[in-house]
Image (cartoon, rainbow, N blue to C red; front, side, top):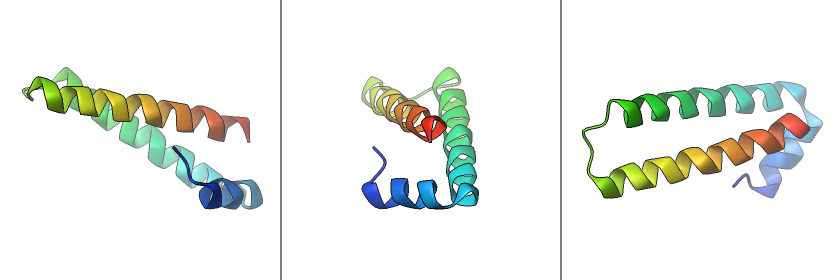
Length: 65
């Protein structure tokens, strides 16, 4: 979840907002590649999937700003 300070900075500065969006999109894409090519155990996969879901929620919030 995005902290309050980060949200406030994104509201104040479009450049920060765009950078945060780009960073999240990249992280999600890379994590999804890791999941697709995965040789991880179930616990690690579950953790990674949870992080992707959380990042997608954060991204949705940022898109609304």
